[in-house]
Amino acid sequence: MTHRPPPLSGVRIVESSLLGPAAVTTHLVDLGAEVIKVESPSGDYIREMTWPIVEGTSLMHLHLNRGKRSLVLDLKSDGGVGVYKDLVRHADAVVEAMRPGALERLGLGYDALREVNPRVVFCTISGYGATGPYKDLPSHGIAYDVWAGLVNPAYDDDGFCYIPEHPSMGIHAGPLMAALAILAGIIQARETGNGCRMEIAQSDAAAYMDWYRSETWKAYERPADLVTGNKSDNYERRAPGTAGMREGVRYQMYESADGHVLFMASEQAFWRNFCEGVGRMDLFERWPGSTYADHARGNRELQAELRDIFRTRTTADWVTWSGTVNTTIAPVNTPKTIAHDPQFQARFDWLPHETHGADMLQVPVHIDGEELTDPEIAPDLGRDTDTVLGEVLGYDTDTIVSLRRAGALG
Image (cartoon, rainbow, N blue to C red):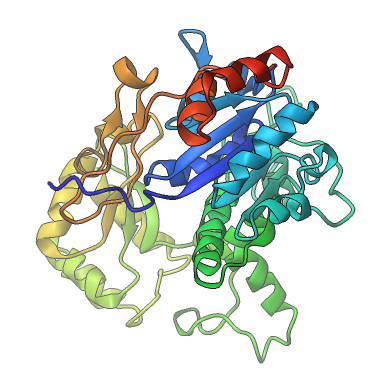
């Protein structure tokens, strides 16, 4: 492995963030960007948020703020505002990861910062964005998923409604899309000398990532003779997205001897290979299916046969076997078991708790012939204040002392 500078070496980002939207720059710092997290004297209370709390610090902080520098500034002071502008003078981007306009109210909005650095990319990420009737509503991450129609209400045995377990889409997809947009802005700024202002809503990202279902419903508003199902369903419309998978048979989950597998033989070739492999060509001869996208929808007789077949082997055995006969079977993991999956172990490394405070997944980017440098542990509040002021801005000791005495550093 070579040890060349990481891909985003030389990219500097100033971040003003609270809680989860700080993930915007986590993606960038993992790839080598320098991220300076500017915090108020009271700090980002992400360090105390949610669970688990690992030796007094939240896993959320350890994960989302790893690799970043923490600089404390009192942005309600003239000195603090001046230091912030000095940081922006030498930065590629500013991330405002909080309600839109927070920096504007401190005299540090895009127009003010553009005067300092015309090439700066200013990105705001918030819950509902800077426009629309919800723009000023306070919210948390699950709000964006339920707003986008991704989470259905569940009820317990006593009839009380509750939030079911679900992957969080908005708080993950929003920052990832923002990181992509920031890089696009930086490329443009370096080519043209002109920065830009952009804003991303986590709710928008949740809806955008679920485009297949919402766009299908939109398509179904058109006449049935113009928008149909596919050929294998005799052109009958299915429910949008994964809801249309419920009646599938050759594309369905089945119990194995010790867990579950996902069977995906919707292509006729994979279905034939499966039947040959288990010695049941009678199933193929009776129900050959269409060439593509045929789930044998609603065929309960075939489903019962497959249910019995899949119970005869363990999940691991079925997955290994599928590779030998060239058919489509995947293991059904849980967030608890996935770390034991051999594919996961071959692809992921952990940042160990001994050095990073908690065991965390490394960024899933593999660069041929290179090894990315591990980010540092997430910072305590103000850990890097003097270092950033001295090394990044070139302030001498007297200047730093003077700023501290004036209250600019909290």
